[in-house]
Length: 49
Image 1 (tube, rainbow, N blue to C red):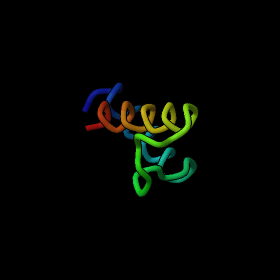
Image 2: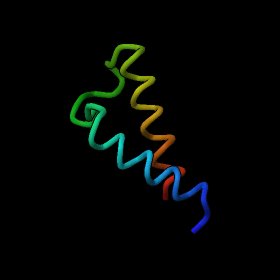
Image 3: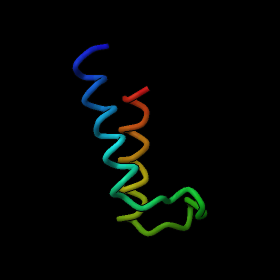
Image 4: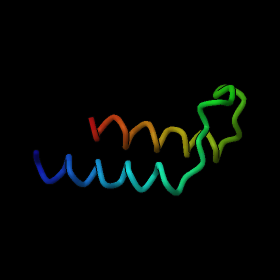
């Protein structure tokens, strides 16, 4: 496993513990900051896989 993938997996684990979950909400109705947070979480998860 590369260092980059390990870093993203660590970041994803921290995100799961710290940041609020957005997926039980309608994503099209989120405010701009919450939409950015959901996008960030998606980006980190996508790179961790």
